Image 1 (cartoon, rainbow, N blue to C red):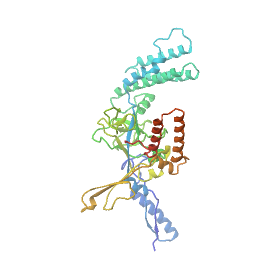
Image 2 (image 1 turned 180 degrees about the vertical axis):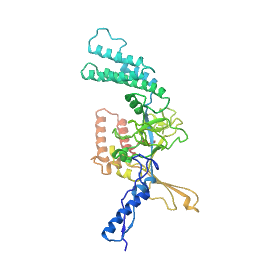
Image 3 (image 1 turned 60 degrees about the horizontal axis):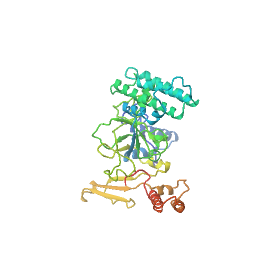
Image 4 (image 1 turned 45 degrees about the horizontal axis):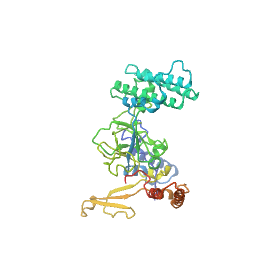
Length: 444
């Protein structure tokens, strides 16, 4: 009788960087046949040595089975531009910090701390005002020297805090102008080999930061934990070429909550920060976005966040998708910074009735006469703030105790005339709504 073994080897890798991409740590370096041959050969050798008949092997490779069945969708909420713009550099020079600490001409012979700092900053500024296409490399190297000197003088008490800040902003101004000159010299290429090492690194690092409505630690922890690279691409404006090189930053307060490794097309190559080229890049090409300020004419949805709603130039929401994450990322994630599970949308074709546990469902497609083509969609909302607090997180707080304390404090503030009764009630109502709200930013 032949025995049956289940879950042979457990996992089979996926080609995250695309098929047949060589030199990538994000793709399998073997085929399914190689995988089967190695497993069967290893078991067969043991069976021959032990004198037992070979069993029937059943492999349940979870990642291989589940990786293609889901896509994580998230929208962009804000953008920190890293583009090189000479107008931005001019804005630095006109900033209040500069105007306050950098007089036009320090008095000759002034040996005071303020005078010495002002003279150094004046010399530093001359580096910026005299730089151009002929000397931008020298100017950038000089600015690095002056900024280092400024930090040393600040530690010695010669420069004030405002003067040290002005030196940092001067370096930013010189860097941006140097990058403008470098971009013109490179004529749109990404070959930075002709630039000084420091400026080449600055050019590669001068990318925009797209702030996404997501928690990396909750929804795709492997990008942080083991350096897994998942394919990411825009889901909007696919008929327009992307022009902005960007990295992604999530909603958490941690600097590790970002994605800065991306899968490229096998035909695309980009010089990374370390100078390497390959199928994995430290930036992702995305579309330019523009903030739409809240105004009387703005819709309630645009202004629900209380500030500037970020949408595409045509007033479209800009959504990205992370692919091949499968079923494990959300399971392995934790409530880091108290972000809960995301909303789930299940889509399939079947004749079965929607899941009664789902909070909302939609049934569409063709008629009942052809159930194979019937499309079913079920939406399961993500966790609320209260649900995250009740799901075993060690916060040691509950909605009831927090609201009881808040009401007591609000009553005390009203009694002491520190809050008007209507203000206290508004504060309590806002907290109540927060407990029932989604843990991610959502349009109302």
